[in-house]
Each structure stands twice: as structure tokens, then as C-alpha cells.
Length: 109
Image (cartoon, rainbow, N blue to C red; front, side, top):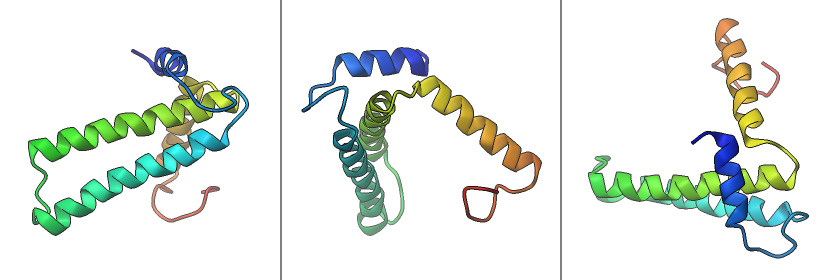
């Protein structure tokens, strides 16, 4: 499956108010799901001495799937093709790597 296929299937499963004209809903969902990923990692540090077991990795995988769904939904709400978003990101990061600018901060490196 590529990102374009994923986005099409994700949108077919979308159910939320004003679908197709509501970027706020998937933005908030994205923040919530990303927070759930962070919380699971935090609990590995707190409860498992930083050791990721198979059960935790599976739970994080599932949360990352939810993050991906919200990314696909937000992209669609904004008229963006998820495949294009992915390609542009790799192009940007490759440019930074080639210019030795992966480190540091700021969007315009």
C-alpha cells in the first residue's frame, strides 16, 4: 500500500462533523493520538526501566496507525495528497543532509 491508497481508504472510514471542510477535527485528533504515543513511551521509562517489550511495541504501533490516520485526514481536509506530503518531506530532509543541516533547528535550514 502506498500513501495515496492509504489516504483514500482512510477517508472512506472518516466519520466526523463537517467532513470535507473541517481541518480542526483531525488536527485535534492528531494531537491527541501523538500524545498517546508519547504517554506509552513515558510509561516505558517510568515502569519498565526504559525497556520496550513486545506488548508495548505493539501498542505503540497501533497508536502510530491512529496518528497516520489523522495525518491522512488532515492532509485531505487541506487538499493535500499524502503521497506528495511524504515525497516533499524526504526531499527536504535529503537536501538538509546533503548540506550538513540535519542538526540544528528552524524550518529554513
